[in-house]
Image (cartoon, rainbow, N blue to C red; front, top):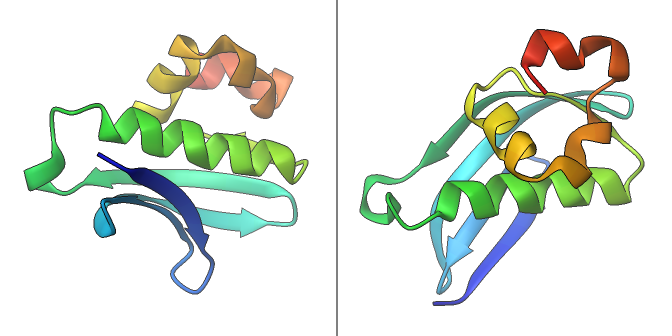
Length: 101
């Protein structure tokens, strides 16, 4: 199973493909270098395989490479961040408690 995460700025979302097929996405609203992440979706046929976590980690790593910050409004994103504490610094320190990071 080959996966890749890429930014689709025209749709304002990061997408994950599995073997070349769209498997899910995380929407974003961008304000400068800050990405608000309101919604994550994994398509039903790909659920239960860890695709959502791969998607969120891939999106967060790309945002980190760009020097951005994250407001993880989607409740799934803080869970992934807690599982990957090296990504917690993407959430502004004064907002981490609000998001449970």
